[in-house]
Amino acid sequence: MRRAIPYSGYEDYDFEVATSDLCDCYGRYLVRIKEMRESVKILRQALDRLPDGPVNVDDRKILPPPREELETSMEAVIHHFKLFTEGYSVPPGDVYVAVESGRGENGCYVVSDGTHKPRRVKFRSASFVNLQALERMALNHMIADMIAIIGTADAVLGDVDR
Image (cartoon, rainbow, N blue to C red; front, top):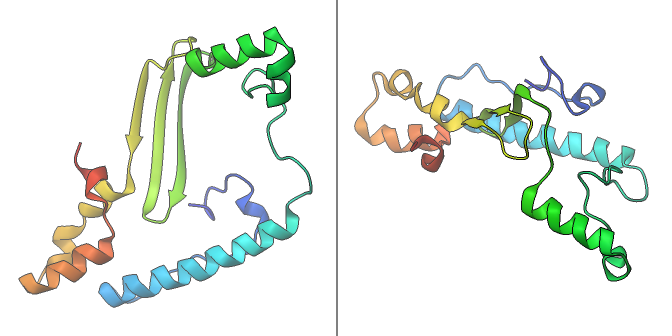
């Protein structure tokens, strides 16, 4: 996903998509090892490009005031209180955003009616989707193999239990 539909600057980094032609537990293990190596490669490139100084967003509507201002400004205290109790208003509409995680695509769908509380939120976890392939992965294997097959599918059962 980071290669096909780049986001957050991934198009600026040099990395390979980890794949394997082996369709078994060992192949999935090799993919994980390759993914870790490529992640380190991306992190090194990102650290080289990281500018000096603060990296916070400079938007006072969504960023809490600095601690020093809380001691001297009543407006800062009020803004701090309202930001953490009510949040900030989001324009009306809906959006789906997906990111690539270590287990696959994680997505979040949010519907806003223009207030500070979302009207609807739906999360799509990679673990639920990955377990759908379990039947195909287990085909013609022994029951004892299921431990390794489920383990290399790397599903978080808390994601699956909805």
